[in-house]
Image (cartoon, rainbow, N blue to C red; front, side):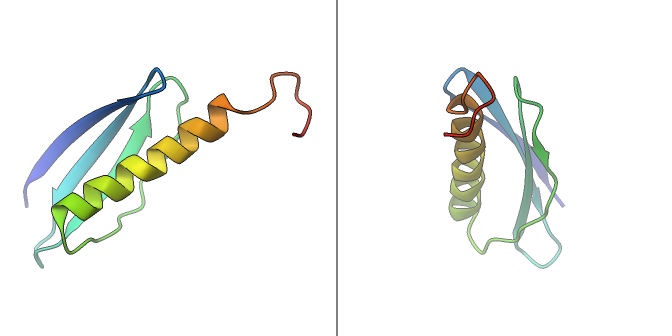
Length: 77
């Protein structure tokens, strides 16, 4: 299996995506968001590397948006 790491900057945070090729020819990934501390270690196979990386970036961006757009006073929006 091969391993690689991709870093993506978004709204002042770095999404670090770890990509791994599986023995059956698919890809799995996990990610961490620096500055937030959120990590998702679920392996999600994708038939295409580009689709898998895009899905990881999109999920990381959603987490960052939720973190950055939360009310600072603790109230519900």
